[in-house]
Length: 418
Image (spheres, one colour):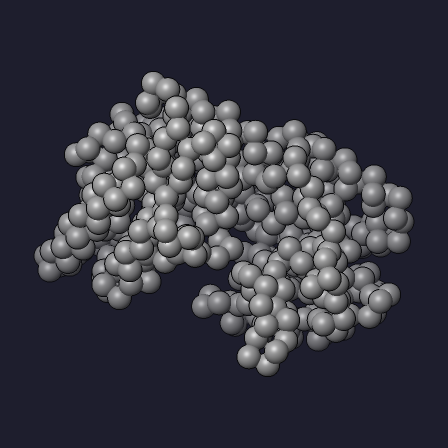
């Protein structure tokens, strides 16, 4: 029986993991004729099926005011508690409006009961679900205990209560085995692991006319090797190892292209990377000003491409992250049939590596032997095709939409009886 499903988060916009994965879940649910609706503080979803409440966005001034006074401190002022309560009560009233407006049957909180970027939203959701006993499936991407900036705080009472809450009318989903264990250990909550997924049943289309000139537009020649680092410039992405790899390849045709900008935490890091690239004689270019969430032309009339347009043209993908909750970029590279160099971060070692992919792996640093292997892959088309075809088949088995479909069907049946 078709249900009306309400997704809830602080933001559904852009290319972050929560926005991307929730859209995939909605697609899978639609196959069973479940209709999805969206509640958030920022949204790029269809306005006709969205309920946008600016106060629910983590960047809303009142929420930022609260965050400044609860993180990194072990005592909170009574006035701060009052402000938390006031914003919580208001947001809770908007959740009631959202459910009434679209006549919802099930809620799917997306990460807002896991990481306290917006504490009042998490408390409001907990109270709403406790008051209504409405069925819910909570999708947790990363927990507060995984982030050092939340380790000293003045809100342990709220974190115990709502991040996440232990509710009989809610099922919990995590994205890796480590999170499943920690959730059981810390909260006594059982959960199911649903990894990030991709639509491997439908391979990507080849580059169309719009994207046909990507290489030329970002300054690459026909015979250059396009080595893509498909991430933001932040320290945990380990981009210095990608620079080291290109340096060891000792081929001026190898160009390292970084797709996204630095953002708040990465400007000093970017400066360090630029200095390193200069010292290592590596042609590194950050093309964030030519990459957007949708294709369009900028104020100068230049084409803005999507990350997917870049993948289609790349020859090789580097992903030397030190830590990832799962690793969306890895699945994307495999989906677009590109060979990958990956650092063996803990979640990869435990959850992904045993599946049997053929990837170039490193343990924290690049060696000359790895560079030799990458050089071989770049120059041997037959070997490259063999590797990417194998990886695509493995991913289709373990990371297709069907993985989500079967679990969500079981959850919906257990919650609603249908």
